[in-house]
Image (cartoon, rainbow, N blue to C red; front, side):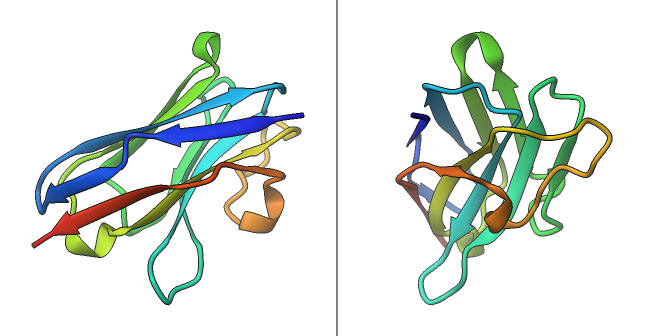
Length: 126
């Protein structure tokens, strides 16, 4: 069975950076992504990347500040978060999808992902 374990969350000041990591085990995932859920809000898409890293997509709210990457040798996906804002505060979840056809848009809906991590808290103080 596939398993995802996130790490790297924490409390930082606005303008700071954090890097989240998600280690996958048990399965080879075609697409891996990050979602986040703030208190009282629905879970929202942040970023996703294909296995070859040739396809990535970002939510408009994080474009230019966040970068997703993956190291297949380590079965790990990263989310580098720069210029953090208080509105980035949320629990960040790693998600993964087994199959994906190259040429299709990388999935951005949570329902399109089959595996989820337990989440890691990111808090940004103003």
